[in-house]
Image: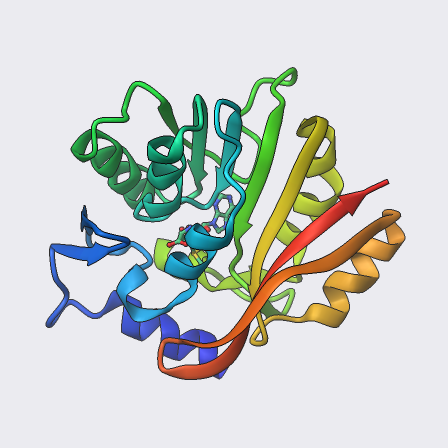
Length: 223
Ligand SMILES: C[S@@+](CC[C@H](N)C(=O)[O-])C[C@H]1O[C@@H](n2cnc3c(N)ncnc32)[C@H](O)[C@@H]1O
């Protein structure tokens, strides 16, 4: 929990926060109150590792500033949906889709997990760089930025695992960007209970807000 609070402070700091940043060879708009990819290596690494379905459909939960969703579209995904519970993140993703000329292919919606999707939507790849800190059931979200780090009682992780597989195309794949600040054991128990398997697609030592962690892109295997 202390790590989550430190991360919220760091990503919420106004002083010295740029209005734009460079990542993956492009310049990105950064709005106040949005998870800032400059403070961690997760956004860059996961966006590099993800097998974007060229010509297919990509769904990102929690798009933040929009780097991954926009990169998916620029890599050749025909249809990208970017969802975030934070209104500032939704505006930020839309601004970057516009900035990089892919607003026609990136649909951005404010949504609590999958709630804003139509019931018949299906995707070739579903991805979430998750808010990994397992917050206690009594945790109160005080501002939108805390959604970037905390998941109360791991309820969103639980819903991601139970609802996500139903949104996949027949050969669709589901990924979770995770790190060692998260509760991997709890995640594994949830996956087991749903008959899902978690495998490590790629991992690497890295840092999150100055804290050394192991970053891993997990694949959720649906049998
Ligand atoms: C760790 S940040 C990752 C942001 C971005 N994907 C990136 O990699 O730079 C997690 C994001 O998930 C969003 N989020 C958290 N809970 C959510 C929920 N229930 N539904 C949708 N988005 C959520 C947060 O607002 C935040 O933007």
